Structures are given as structure tokens and as C-alpha cells.
Length: 264
Image (cartoon, rainbow, N blue to C red; front, side, top):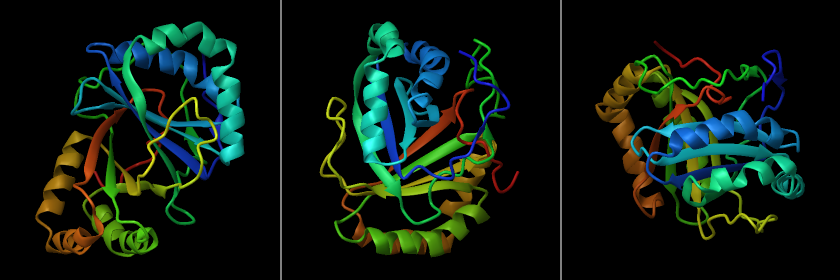
């Protein structure tokens, strides 16, 4: 399926976001990416949802990570029902499910503050070519880093405020661009055919770096920054377990990151 190159996505943010991590059978990730990018983007968005981004996990070769957004929980129920009861999924579900060991690692999220969602107002998805660029074609591909912080209950607002005022300036000074920040959305799952992780209380940040070299420099600078170490120390009492950090490479059809990072 082609996605018109002149289509502009006007969503400033999705109030409801899913972060989905799929464990795949060895060697099946490129099969799923080809199927997803060619068959499952336009058909999902036709139901009213937004396919925000899909990624290779650079540290876990059999993981596929993606995000999609909805206007609200009722819109989520309607859109998922329409897609999973529709003809495109019926035609390709056996092939898609055949690549997967587990698809139930799903976090249901909301923007951490008013402007913390993904700004897709200028994002454009190019037409599909049927040829997917390998993540090993050099060091020019952008990197998306998702950090998952597991929080004690009841401190989400305070953690988000501290992140917004203290952490973001440090991340941007080290070369990153914040794409979005999210917390757990504590509501009933309106589409129980697809499970989500319950009992979770997370804060998630999503940043973009221009390429692998910029990402390495970013990590090095943060590790050597006394200000960043102080921020991490202040967070320690808020966390219930170690952070999970995903280092991701967008597929050619991913809307995120359709931005420039802060620094070359």
C-alpha cells in the first residue's frame, strides 16, 4: 500500500498511546516489518488511530517495538474492533502471528503534561517502495531512545514536573530532542482481546538523536555530567526497579522521529 507523500498528519498529540514490544521468532523481524509497513499502517489509520512509530530494537535482534495513538478510550475500542474484525487483518493475521512468540507486552499511556505528546503536525510518511533500508547501512540513521521509569504510586505528577524542569535541559544540552513524555493511563482496557500490562506505574521519555555517533556522544556526556548524576540521584527514591532503556532504529515508514535532533 502506498502512503501519499504529501499527506500531513495534523495530530499534535494522541491522548491515549500504546507502547507495544513484541518478542519474535529468531530471524522473523524483517518479515514482520515488511508486512507491517506495507499492509498495517494505512489499514489501521483508516479506522481512526495513528500509527506513531515502529522500530527495530538495536540491542535485541528479535524484538519489534511500535506505538499507536487514539483520541480516547472509546475511539480505541471502535478502531481496534474495526481493524481486527476487518479484511486486512483477516488476510494477513496468520502470517503476522507466525512471526511472534509474544505480543502482550503493552503499556497504556497518556501524555505526562499538556504538551508532552508527539507533535506530528509536520510529519510526512513517504510512499512505500517495497525495499526496506537495512539498519546496518551505515551510521546515518536516526536513533530513538525510550526510557521507562517504574515509579512508586502517587508521585507521577512530581516526577513529571522534575523531569520537565531539570532533566529536559540536560538531555537537550547533550544533543537529544525530546519527542514525548508519558505516564501510565489507569483505566479499564476497552479492548480486552488485546491485553495490556496491569499494575504498572511508569514514566516514559522518548528522545531522538541524529545518528549513532550523536547517540554515543549523548550517552558519554550524560554519564560525565555532575548535573545529570544529581538528577538521577534525586530520582532514586521514586523508582521501584531499574530503568529499562530501549535503543531503537525507526523503519522507513515510521512517523517518529520526523524531527531534527538538537545538535549534529
